[in-house]
Image 1 (cartoon, one colour):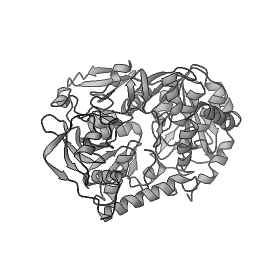
Image 2 (cartoon, rainbow over the protein chains, first blue to last red):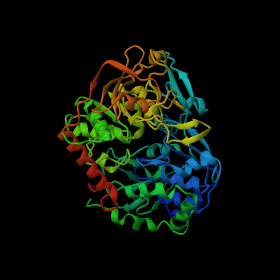
Image 3 (spheres, each protein chain N blue to C red):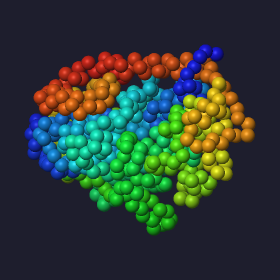
Image 4 (cartoon, rainbow over the protein chains, first blue to last red):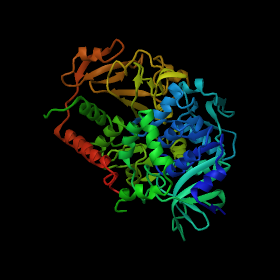
Length: 284
Length: 263
């Protein structure tokens, strides 16, 4: 059964310097509150996995938490570039980071292979593309039945997966609804998993094929209302698109970024997230 | 006919290329606007798919990201991202991939990864995301982007997504069985690949566009079709739909209270 505990304890117990960690979420249900806690705890040398390293990885990289990033699309979705990540790649600020770049198809397959306990994933991809020349974890294999040459990528097996979900029941069974991304795969591929949820309920009250992670696949559940802000939680609150536009300015300058992080992350706790989504709750 | 901007002409020309029967994998930005204008005008039954796993989506406002809640709420179904890429894209279910680009060459090869050298880039761009496999697994690929010397280059710095390589039979030579880029829609013109060489050829110039303007915005010697047509200007109906869509989108993305107000 999953343990319920405060977010700060969950991160302190499960995330260590140098760990491989995936804070997953595909535009939806991004675990912002948990990432901020990792920043407050001053984690260093992390190997970060994520299909879409958006604002939270921009923040973690800018605060010096990361040594390597494994990713497939490093943008501020719909807005532009990730300016802190760019600064790290182009100018080694605040420290140099290594990158291992994939396509979405490749990294999604790599998570699935991790969840399936396989060493690698095989798929039809990367034909004619340059990424295999710069990422040593992209190879090819020949199908033993048809002779077709297929792409192979190393499975993703993080030490820790961190995701945000709508709700858990009192045992710690977790329900994810809406755009489910690769979160189930990330949790099942990882050695440990932390899930932050909007609320805990008596019954998940769902349908038989819903995306549910049984309590024994999750190590820790933390209740963090609004914990996905500025991304969204389907059925709870909307995406704060204005914040994503604002981040482009905040992240454009090192000093502005540091001031923002001091005020909004280092000086705060995860309890501020509930307030941040108050105005984003529609007439659900 | 009312006045229209080059950007509106580009979106509307792109929307006209789509039909009711298409199953279209939609890239964010310009492709997303074009695909939704098509759905709101002549192709109401087109199936739009975004890489977040939303299949058959009918958003009222343009999403800011490929995973806005609006896309999921209005979709026929939403599948995991793993399934999206394995079953639906790799499985060959998608007829058209609609992509944008940062850099494009005359053979439809796309760079959205880096400007400069990969390990020491001058500009680090977001990267490929879904595009490398969209470009190889969709039945055919449409590309839409504005023309500029910076974007339309003789040689791209990085092959993010393979188009027609060095031209001719390059796709077949590396084992690709899909058509690749078959249409390029810009703010100035409509381009199609030459059947043999696969070099993009300007087949239609938008109203008022000159060959000087074309030469000033493209980094290679442009080939023109034998009979270059003039693109039909946007109709009142097309412009109305596009402008309404942009107005709804702007209002929705402006402030917290209005963000994705459909929830």
